[in-house]
Image (cartoon, rainbow, N blue to C red; front, top):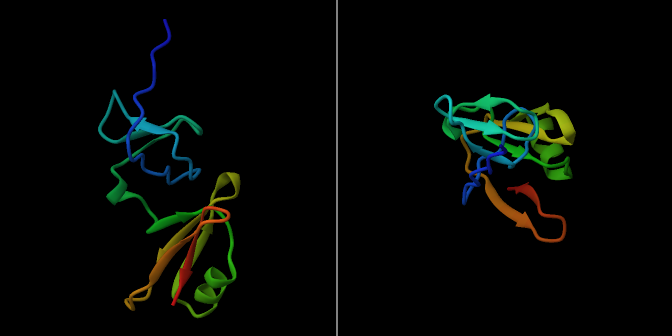
Length: 103
């Protein structure tokens, strides 16, 4: 018998593949990704500050300035760690639903 997936209203991104097709893990504390079939900890304990769905000129400029570290994830996603303590302004680009970092 197949069980339905308990969808979350605001699902966290998987730190391994970047997918938001996640649910609460029934066997252990944390979450389960239905795309890559991995378990991961609470969103506050993942390895990245955020997951981007693509490369932008703004992200490239921040990496060149040494303000972020960008790590390639499976399926074309990027894990981004923010190093700078200067506040960053976030805006969402509506045309392609891509998170863009601007200063």
